[in-house]
Length: 107
Length: 123
Image 1 (tube, rainbow over the protein chains, first blue to last red):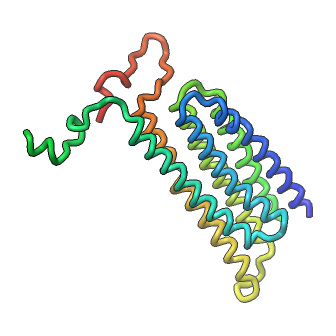
Image 2 (cartoon, each protein chain N blue to C red; image 1 turned 135 degrees about the vertical axis):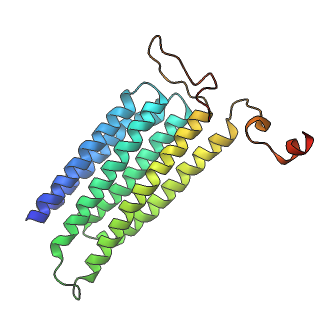
């Protein structure tokens, strides 16, 4: 029974320590800072789901939620990172670093 | 009793590491250092907290025949921790790479060269 109260305290602590990440998500100067904050919050939500399962006494159910949430979080942050990688690339000539098929046939 | 003490120690250590990650995410000056703090602290604290609850599940374990659901929960928790151990550095590296390609501005001490603007840092 004491461990449940301890778990409630740990969950509240994780929730409170998420607030700095939330602040970074709000004021972050670049979009990538916001994505880093979202990544941190998502990973911690998976942890929080395990804690909620322990508090409710239904860990066997909430563990599946946490697993699915971790999978979705990884996919989402990786997709956002690749998207920014593709679209906001600086003005570098693509032929210079990655020779394409057309530029190879021209030269 | 010793299982509870061990799990409490692991969980408290994980919470402390997450406090470090949150402070680093707020106070560090540029994108690279913030990503560094967030990636490392987040990975280690998630691992420690989940492993702490994984150890705590062993409390009701009696025998393989009777308490195999607990064993299943432990296996799933270990799966989550291994998954976070693999994927969190991967996504951190992808974000750092996107910032590098995006030419995110690093905070550089006075009198030191910025290798981001010349080609010496390119590979």
